[in-house]
Length: 109
Image 1 (cartoon, rainbow, N blue to C red):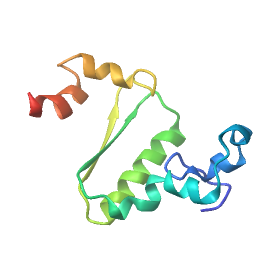
Image 2 (image 1 turned 135 degrees about the vertical axis):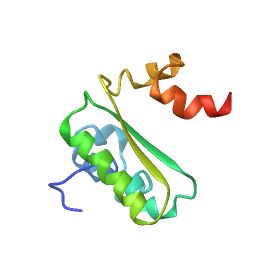
Image 3 (image 1 turned 180 degrees about the horizontal axis):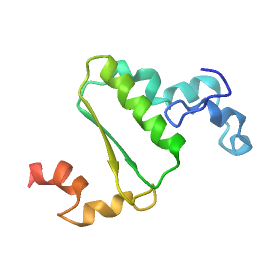
């Protein structure tokens, strides 16, 4: 992956951030934290959930990751939750009427 196209699912961009002076991740560690690089090894159904209030790039990355997982014939659902961002997404678990609760909690209750 080129340095110009970063993804939250490919952690390479961390190497170029000033914060990495504190984190001190190397290339091998970054690969261990990059889910898209081991998408074909997933062995359970996966749900990729992103909020509609995220930036277009973050939504694109979530869709790219879900498509990569699906390309290996693995079960993967991509969900976009309306009026949600990465700060508020977990709030959906507090309401039994939310899509996240219905998807993940109801089948187990």
